[in-house]
Image (cartoon, rainbow, N blue to C red; front, side, top):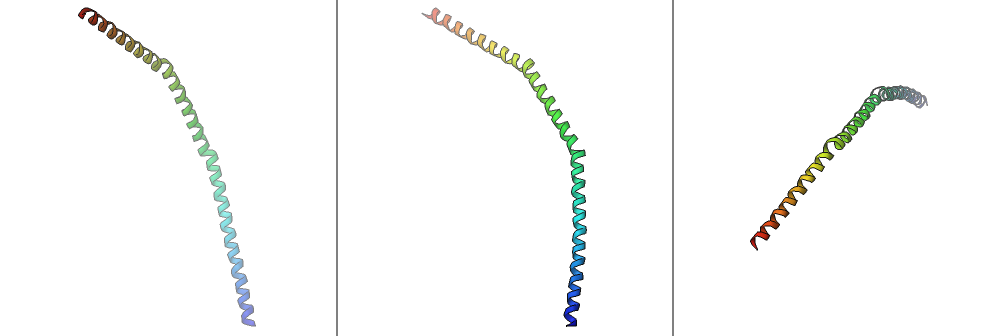
Length: 100
């Protein structure tokens, strides 16, 4: 009976030590999660805010260029294409009229 009691006591002590070690690791894990949350709040959030500000600036620049550069160029190219086509139509009719 003495051997069983000693084995039981050793098992209880081993489980207690194991519980203490697991508890210590759990405390370390919680501490690391807390540190990560602080890092995300203080380091990553300002970076994301800066990225959003940059995206807004790029969006504004794109609208400005579209309104002030691209649209007038499209209108000018359309006008030139229309004039070119009109001249082709007019010169084609004159040739037909002269041949007949």
